Amino acid sequence: AQSVSQHNHHVILSEAASLELGCNYSYGGTVNLFWYVQYPGQHLQLLLKYFSGDPLVKGIKGFEAEFIKSKFSFNLRKPSVQWSDTAEYFCAVKGSQGNLIFGKGTKLSVKP
Amino acid sequence: NAGVTQTPKFQVLKTGQSMTLQCAQDMNHEYMSWYRQDPGMGLRLIHYSVGAGITDQGEVPNGYNVSRSTTEDFPLRLLSAAPSQTSVYFCASSYRRGGLHEAFFGQGTRLTVV
Image 1 (cartoon, helix red, strand yellow):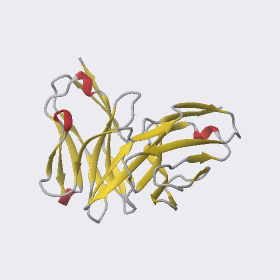
Image 2 (cartoon, helix red, strand yellow):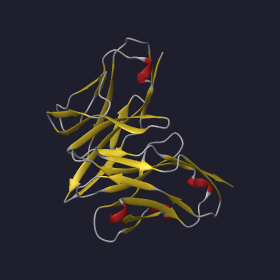
Image 3 (cartoon, helix red, strand yellow):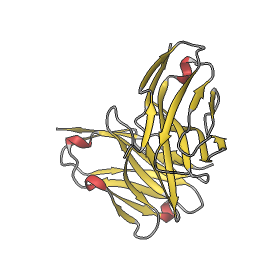
Image 4 (cartoon, chains in turn yellow, brown):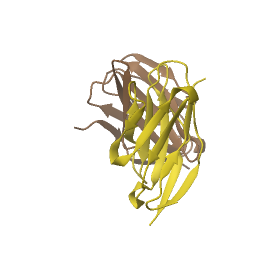
């Protein structure tokens, strides 16, 4: 069965620290990979996506992710986090029927 | 652009009551899905549709029904509400262009069953 694993349940950082959130997926077909962000009380918004081409994908708000096929990973990174990045982050892979399969999410708390 | 519109935003039901969560999209997307979000569980797929007249079950379909009579609408019906259905529900629609698939989410419906 297709699945997505996010390694960290809750990450706490100080402002200006670097961020890396882990994501591993299991899916043997052509991958579409996504990172979504959910700010408190809001719906999910797309941060970035990978379909093909350059495995280093740049998204909004200074986020980037690297697709490493050999490791089935799609980790999210940001060089310097801000208090406004406090949110929950979800990694997702497109399933065989066009639906999205989500990881359990990682809560990020950034201390000012 | 309206995107994906969900109604209502909040709802409180008594155990055993039925209701329909509405979802409409104006982007002419083929795919529509319903997810529920529970703390520590991520988003779990309830039902999905790959086009008008076609629906299928996701990971947690029990207690829910869907139909897709038009491209735009994908309502989710709770047949007999139970406290275990207390959750936040998100509707999503998505398109496929080439091999890329991208989903757009509604604002969510926070449902409490007492």
